[in-house]
Image 1 (tube, one colour):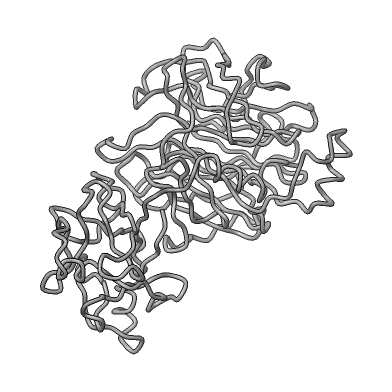
Image 2 (cartoon, rainbow, N blue to C red):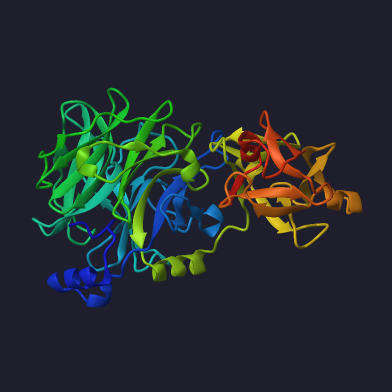
Length: 457
């Protein structure tokens, strides 16, 4: 049974803790989620190879912590990380393991992983590197699982052995010393980026087949090395996919995330299923999930409400927002050459999509959109077209830059923005350009969708 990514009732947790001889206070029911990741953007202006964190109440829409800056950065090896994996250990505390690699120098050999300990994710201590093997190859994309038959944790990672990309495993009790490496999964073709979840008597391994570029799921009744059989068809969204991230949600539903290949594509795609054993996954609409800004190759762990409150208090929520389109959910409101528009994310400068939602310049009951990378400049309408201009503090400017936030015209859970000084008109996009048009609840579905946005980080 996995103690890492499951939703437990308080009674079940207490029973598990007692059966394992652990303090009954060591566990709490998971009600939220935390993601660990690093960041990149198309022109690498958003590249940062430290440990980043984001939180989510539903496991689909994410809010970066610490203004999307790293909470800790490696100080040894390459002094950079990729592919961080956060894991809740059997005592209720956490460990983070990560690839020791700064940037995109994928040709280098490195036998080490970065490791940190954390009691409650508000600090990361005991930094060290552990050597996993002595092969002339890399040690990429670690994942961790509890092997009950061995009473040890397995650390599985991508490496080259015998001329083939495959998964190796070392076992550990303390994440300081490890057993000798073993081949864990070698299906006869090159594979990359494994992720493992133990559920009941089944261990699930999801991976990328480098031959066809698709994601697959394998399973084993023991979790032992070389005991897995692939049971799903290939999965892909977008033009390329890698880094499967398998999660059993707090609602017992299953989610599968896939990272796009490289920083120039949409950063994540997602699937869901209520029956992981059936091997059939439903594609999630991008409208229903929002990854953290610039996030790459992350991992997710369930956390309690107390842990959620603790990390938010410690690291802080963003002081900026992004506006996601309802009918083009891969696109965000941005400014480009001072024109307000809707563009497919990711892009650089990535800061063009970041806004400070401040009290309305003409009416504090409304809102105004101040640019993060051009402070003092606001999104305003001019001849009904939206553009970014510096605040000249005139009454006309303040009125043009003020909107009333309302329930979304196409979805009441999202938002629409009604103009302060032309109150029959709403912010909307037309051919990806932003403007204000006359709209109401009786407007066409398409028009109302054009004027509906998700406000979040």
